[in-house]
Every structure is written in C-alpha cells, then in structure tokens.
Amino acid sequence: MPYRWTDNDRPESRELHLWPHQSMTPGGFVIFIGVTFALLLIPLMALIGTVLLWLLLPFLMTALAGVWFAISTNQRRARILETFTLSDETARLTRRNPRGDVQEWESNRHWARPELHIQGGPVPNYVTLRGAGREVEIGAFLSEDERKALYGELAALLRHP
Image (tube, helix red, strand yellow):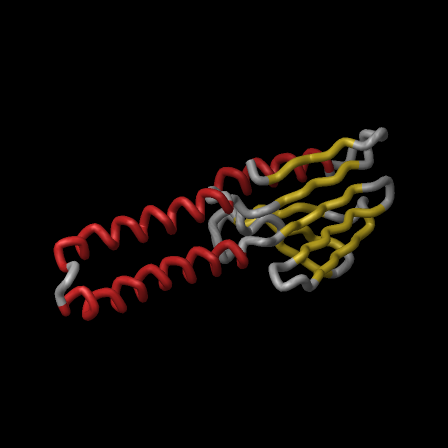
C-alpha cells in the first residue's frame, strides 16, 4: 500500500506517511519512451529516401512529445506526501503538495475523529479527519480499498475508551 506507519518508542505516538501510487520508475520512463520511439520509426523504414518520410516525421515526433509531456506531467503532479503524526496530546496532518507548498491541520487528539463518507465525497469512501473546528481530507489519492483500510486503522487509533 502507498502508506506506511512508523512506530516510535511509545505506542501512543505514531506517524503515518501517505503518497500516491507510482508504477513507473525513472528507468521505466526512459525505456518506455525509447521503445515508443523505436516503434514509431518502424513504419518509416519503408519510406526512407522519399518525401513522405519528411511529411510524416513531424507528426510522429509530435505524438512522441505528447506522450513524454503527459507522463512527465503526471509524475510531477504525483509528488504529494501526507504525514499524519499522532502524539500524546495532538493529532497533526501535514500535506506537501507537488509545487512545494505545505498545508497543515492540528487538533487535540481527544477531539480528532476520522469519518468515512461512503457517498457524497469527491471519491467513493472518502476519508476525512474532523477536529479543531475543521474537516480535512486524508489519502484522497489512495484506491477505494486502501481508503477503507486507512479509515479502519485511524478509527482504531483514535478510539477512546
């Protein structure tokens, strides 16, 4: 799963890191663009020495540039890191966005509550944290099953006797 709990010395103090799933590594990106380039050139082999080669080449290179741009943009937008820190007294969520700006939410641990919005959210099984007069999303980029599991873990950690 694209999130991981880190345990500290004390069980009441934990930290959760969440990030979007990224299936393509930088090396995989290079290989994909290289294979796509090679496959685009195969049909042009029959046109070597003709004017048609020069007529089709700009369109094929534009298609390759479009694929490159789309994948690069997707990888840049997926550079999100959410950190949920739970200490003795506080619950804090910090979100580092792709452009580098940071959003923070903090609440007293006793009043912090996770909520699962099965419908009505931007995605099915939308998970939010409520406390300190605010409600913030957590893990909206996770899959539906991962959000359900995350909600269960948060609910168990923030449960009060």
